[in-house]
Amino acid sequence: AQRVTQPEKLLSVFKGAPVELKCNYSYSGSPELFWYVQYSRQRLQLLLRHISRESIKGFTADLNKGETSFHLKKPFAQEEDSAMYYCALSRAGGSTLGRLYFGRGTQLTVWP
Amino acid sequence: DGGITQSPKYLFRKEGQNVTLSCEQNLNHDAMYWYRQDPGQGLRLIYYSQIVNDFQKGDIAEGYSVSREKKESFPLTVTSAQKNPTAFYLCASSWGHQPQHFGDGTRLSIL
Image: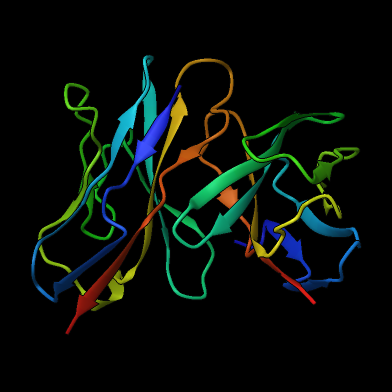
């Protein structure tokens, strides 16, 4: 069975400090991993996807298959990064992406 | 992203009453999903549909029902059998290997 674990329910950092939101997964096959973000009073939106290998809003995430992790990192946090972050997994392969399995989310607060 | 519209934004249910949440998309996406969002529990999948006239149960389908008569519509009914319906409900859609797009959500409360 597949499972996504975000061990931190809450995470607080000061502006300009590095931030790392942890995500671990369990899945016997080849996964696709995502980070979604939900800003206050906004809809849930895709932040980044591991196959894109992009940096969005200064965030990066590397899939580590050995450690089954997909941690989200940003070297210098900004106040506007305060939001709820969800890590999600989909089973790769097939003609469609299929359903997502979400972690419980991490609420990030960046203090001024 | 106005491609997915959920209505109403707020909904109140009386005891023993069924209520239906609307989800419409104009993105021509084949797949649609319903999630329930509770504080500290993340998003849990209720039902999903990959093509018209077909749908599958997710992880917490008990007390819910859906239909997919049209590609653009995937309504969710919260039945009286759902004993703890107070939550935020999110609808999403996707196509092929593209990531899911989400609506603004419906907040359901019990009177």
